[in-house]
Length: 85
Image (tube, rainbow, N blue to C red; front, side, top):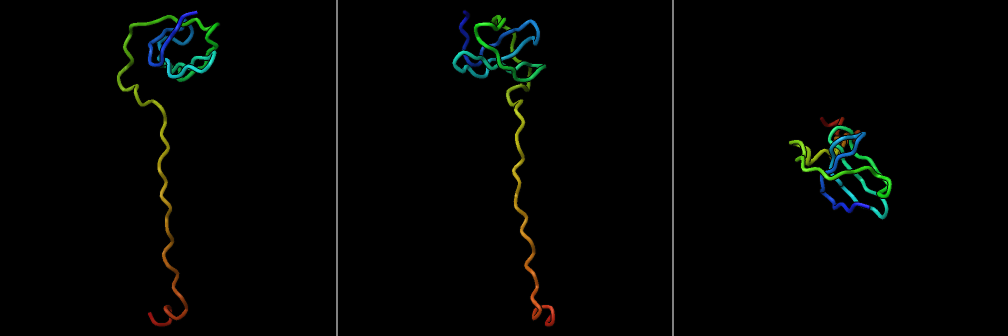
């Protein structure tokens, strides 16, 4: 069985080029350049080491959630304030 490290570039016959993003027990998670993340059983994976550099702009491919800010409601006018103004 081949040993890979996180960040290593690999090539897989079906998905093409990718980078290893996690190693979990007997599984490898690979972020492919054109197909996104995939999980492989390490003993059955057909991964080969690659010298190809990652494509430009691929470092932050993960989708980030927008921070939502709570909108505060305008203070309600009381009956006395409505009568005065």
